Image 1 (cartoon, rainbow, N blue to C red):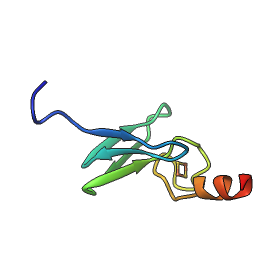
Image 2: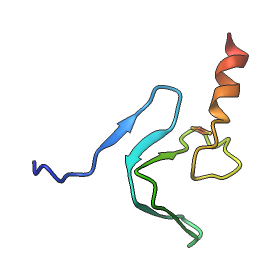
Image 3: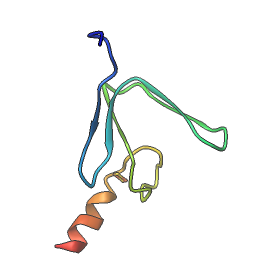
Length: 65
Ligand code: FES
């Protein structure tokens, strides 16, 4: 594996962290781009700015405790 491979970190009950910049192509043709160093991609689908994480997943965690 080359050293310049894209790093993706999976967080338990949280977003998928991807080294930026990223270009996300949605199934409806919409394109979402972020030039952040690290981009949090929503995996819970509760984000108001989906496909990017807005930390709404934390509300779900708090409700369980
Ligand atoms: S993973 Fe953070 S809002 Fe969905």
